[in-house]
Image (cartoon, rainbow, N blue to C red; front, side):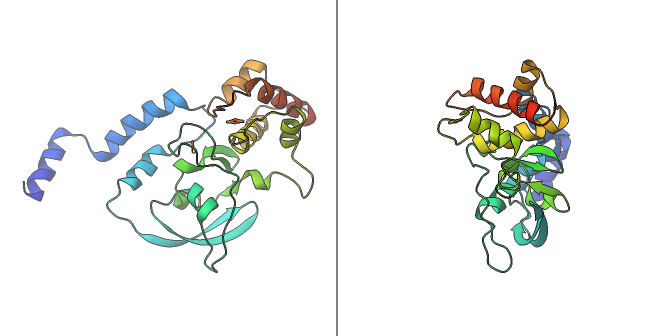
Length: 216
Ligand code: FES
Ligand code: FES
């Protein structure tokens, strides 16, 4: 089939790649993600299917430090944090965010972008330019742990610990927006994060304690 004919037929169905992805993306978000978690699934998926992969040097503000990195249009923020190098050849080396599902389902890769919890596996590095990115490594103040981190330690709110960085960032972000939540609100607020070890009761208690410590 000729390219022209192919194009005509695609247009004839009135389903563009963008509108198709929009439909799929909306369902996925509604099914699995807490409202506070921002996902740009449409953009990420589009880039993965991408026909035009370009490279660009961009600046990212991560934990109040400026990084210049070279990325492809499809590079995720998670990939830059864990495996990226700056343009001087130094590793970014922020491995707190975990690549567990890498499809926006588990929350292990949660970081804050402009104060909102996002899945870094579903956020394009290009889209994080000009925004303030905070990873779990950026929460402590020197040797002083953030109250959410302290509360997780106090309540022993982890087993294997793989989900913990994502939960800590999601909980911090949630408490920033809702400083004195009810038990039900905590459950709902953290619904975008999964713990395969089932430490939810300890995590919820830790969030309540952190809320009190933070004055909520
Ligand atoms: S690794 Fe990003 S949501 Fe699971
Ligand atoms: S502590 Fe193991 S997955 Fe949560």
